[in-house]
Image (cartoon, rainbow, N blue to C red; front, side, top):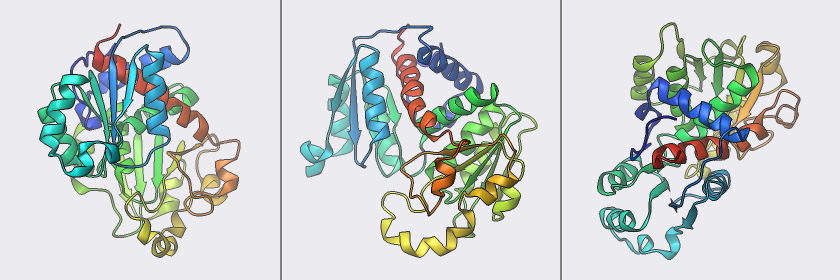
Length: 306
């Protein structure tokens, strides 16, 4: 098991290549019931953003480990009345064993982690979505039996998912190509960090050409074109992002055995067509299920269960 007890996971860059591989191995073992871990711990979910998969998968994962979950709805706690992050963090530290936070600013997450001694997990910020990518890597590994040397192409907005894909793929030796419209590229510091931590011979490319990016890829990945908080821009983005839609054409120039991933929720007919997401090469539902298994492994590792 990855030796992560007591640590935070604020970014995939917090993990080493070996730790990622160990987490994926534990997730696979938990999924196949080769191991059965139990704990008597309490997980708090403090979510400032709406959630389906993250909320349910974390809850089920903790229940299956034998622990308890407290849903800390921000509208019914003192957070909604402006209690300082520092105060909330220090109080929750006295009650909980581990805390997962889904919020907007990465800095808010880092402040929680600074003032709370318990492990703090990034359950999504505007900068990163590390738990999603652990599930994505598990899904790719299940399909191909390996990660190193494969090429993943992400098409769309250079958002939090793109950032964590860059870091995660770099750590496991996957080539990653990010194709975005001009002006929507991923954060330059994240790109450089991913190149700095990448395994040897790993290719990291940011381009504006969706066809070049998709050619020969083992994985085609997309996300909504307007993330939470950007809904007012949704209509204006559609014509700009249309060439980056994951459709039959882009799938035809990828590797013949390529799989389709989408972190969900999907806007069918925008970033992905109904035919592709429902097609035989889609692994979207396995990917969603694997959120639970990957997060169960993460919870067990951070809590030192085993």
